[in-house]
Amino acid sequence: MIPDGPIDDDVIVCRCEEITAGEIRKAVREYKGESVTEIKRRVRAGMGLCQGRTCGKLVTRIIQEETGKKPNEILPSTDRPPVRAVTFGELAGAKEGGCGDE
Image (cartoon, rainbow, N blue to C red):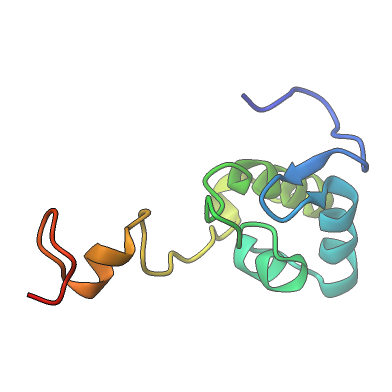
């Protein structure tokens, strides 16, 4: 659930990479970051295990607050494979229950 009102600078927005709202705001101001991908490249918000599924909306909201843009004007983060969590066995092409060397 996204909290109402301003988010304090010391609040961790990206739990995977431990990025605070203040770090995101600073990146938006310094680098004129106007997309989630730009901010992701600058501060790593959205590069952790969840790939931005947890923090993406908050990053978008902070960009919106800093730039005055509407949410639909802010480009989302680009998806990178794998789009969902996969096991090493799936990556190796192993059959269900096998070790991949059959």
